[in-house]
Length: 490
Image (cartoon, rainbow, N blue to C red; front, side):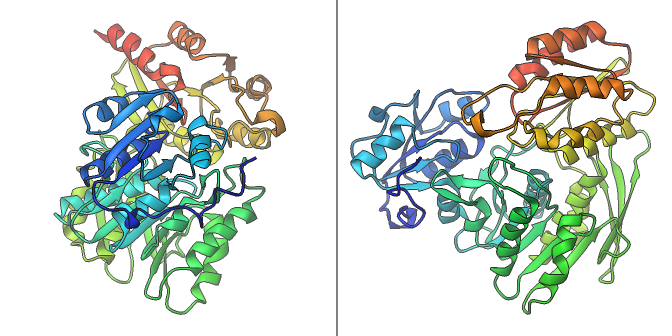
């Protein structure tokens, strides 16, 4: 267990450092941490970093930057005269560099706090929260603001098509960031969004997730309720009218003076009611929205009706901060999408290969359903890796049985054991696979990605749609399938 020496209160502020100060980042190759390192170096700080492994694309991005990196953790990686150490949220107290920070009494901080200080401070802060849709909604909002030449500051938890990086400090006075409800650091057991000081907020969904840190849905609701209650007067909260967890709190939030609560969704009771019609001859939707302030419509180049909700939230935010709605709805069509969010790698009459980040049971179900609707009459082969701490838990097994209902066959990866599993009841994936088969959805279960790749390639039928879902690299499975299937089309 961590000692009391580490705490949020004792962490240091970036704002207290002089120019050219030395900053060391523990866990530098993560999507967020790597881009933070580059941003700090571009602001003039001397930045070093370390990580146990370096994976592309972040490894290549770091190599071409001014950040000095070390592979593996070692106290010697920390400069002797370091001014501040940033500790990643996946880095445990037992890490040898963390131990050195404590032993030498070095100044330290953590990602959401330094992100707020380095790019969000003194801006109109737009924070995108919720169990689902954070990355896509944040990326869409940033895309719209960029398209309107408003030069936003942004942080997105994924790579975005057409964006050089997904963390950027702009000059437009508006920031849009992805506000995660997960822990901030081993010594900061509070949601990351706690530190982003939102001026306005989006809440897309509130479901039970992160079973490793939250005991119940009520615990998660408390965090969101605290976030809303802490908003400044004049704030607007855009809330999904289609999500039960959000709707259970909306009536309470509406009672607070000084807040504007606007609901949006397919529900006819929403303040902004939307309808989505699939495009003919193309992937995506024509979305129309009805509201008292004036109707609007747009073409969405993304799969999934839930992405129509994400897009509407983005448009409402952009309009709120003064963006031109006509220009924004036109810009939606040029959105390049977020990497690994229903990313289409191959699309031919012989085979379609799609990759998605879905891991929560609801996200899996919605992704499977949307892909099936967009490719009617074709066999849907669903491949899933339960990798997140939520998806690996036995408590969600019944939910997953429903999630794959529209798939024609399901291939599952067994849960891989890791540190900290001693007190967790992990899901028996083999048992889940057998039960899916008994319910009429043929399913198989394998120990690793190589076995899964062999199975998918050996069993492939002409016209298959292959959907791969994981919140990790899945041991390079998508790349293996893309290479093999792509060559097969030549």
